[in-house]
Image (cartoon, rainbow, N blue to C red; front, top):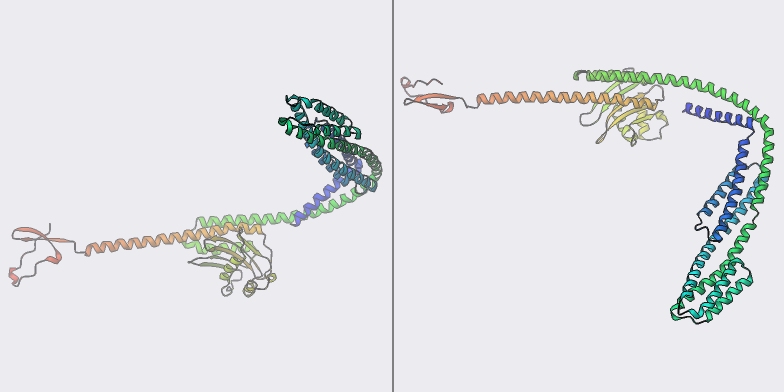
Amino acid sequence: MKTCHTLVALVVVLGLLLWLSIRAIDTDSSGFDRRLAEIDRVAMINNAQRRDVLSARVGLLRDYDSLARQRDGLEGAIAILRQGQKNLSSATATIDGISVLIKQQEALVERFSSDNALLQNSFAYFGLFTSRLGASEEGQRNVPAFSALAAAMLHLTLDTSKDAAQDVATRLDELATQAPAPSDARSVKALIAHGWLLQKLLPEVNGTLKSLFALPINSEVMHLREIVKASQNTTRATATTFRILLSITSLLLLAILVRLGHQLHARTLMLQRRAALEHKLAEISTRFINSRPDDVGRLIEQALGELAIEMNANRAYLILAGASRQIYVWSEDGAARPLGWPYQALALAMQFRQAGENIIRITRTDRLPPGDEAEAFLSAGVRSWACVYRNGTDGISCLLSFDKFKTPGRVPTRDLGLLRMALDAMATALERRNLELERTRLETRLQQAHRLETVGALTSGRDSWLRRDGGVDVRVRKTERDPAPANPTCRRKRARPD
């Protein structure tokens, strides 16, 4: 983590050094160029927006998406200009004034968009109903009134003065007093409604356009441009200051590089230690691969001792949970382990474990919150504790743990991750030994069953004998032999077996 902090500081200093170098060389001309470009962009977007407003007014612009994009562009350019001129009060005031004018322009554009949409819609319906009524055979007597209204409306589109608006209102009143044909009544009513709407909207829309074009945005933008140019000329005089800062930053960079060198050396030693641990793990795994079942226990104790030395621990133990619980312990001084301690370690691992992780590390047990866990470590004399484990169906199935009861110490989490290999190798060796013992037990039982089957076959009374009765050979069982005659001289001779 310290190396990461040093690298971050190094990157920051290098960035500062690069920034100072650029500022010392070109005196931030690129920054001023960007601001001037944004100022020109504001003027360009403003002119484009006014052009699109005029196009929308005459019906050449069918949608207002470009007006929305131009509004966003103006706001983004103003935000960039604010960031670039925070320390220049005159430019900030001018930018604030431009921002206020742009807000007013946005409100006018929004009002224009709404009114112009209604205006264009009413124009379309007004022209539709005028054409329909003019072509109607039943409404021929009202054609002069329709024509006069259309002419007055056309004049109002070009001149929105009060006289022109009053002329349209007069034509609408005259048309309303005339009795239309029954088939044209609804069309005439709709025509009059849209006519009144146009009579109202046309002056309002033109008034909105006049207010919009009266905003002095372009003049304020040009004033801001002059301020930025003056600030650019003033900044060039600070190049000497930046050169001094550049020298100081170079010395700071040198100090950081020296510190980074020491940290890299320490990291190299840590990697060497990690490589030695990996070599030891490979050696232990090889032993278990070539081991006999009778040697597994001895090899596990030997591996625990070697791993404890690599981990700078005072005690190491392996616990297999489940029905056939087994424990293997190695201690540096050979002293007897605390009463019930390794099994307490299994219970503590169940409490401290987290989902998705098979590693637990407690650097200082005396800093744990008061409770049963801290009391368990204290009674066992454990000052630092680390372990890796394997999960089973009912919890932790196998635990490899290391204790320090002399002095507390920090164990890197990455080293504990490597110890999973050792845990897997030892657990696999024990499983293989258990399977081998089970196989031997099953073979012994099978041999005993075969022997019992043979003895049963010999003693089952299935062997037969032959005896001759009346000149005929008869096969009888042993249990069915004739009883001995009363007279020994009359005893029959036993027939020979086949």
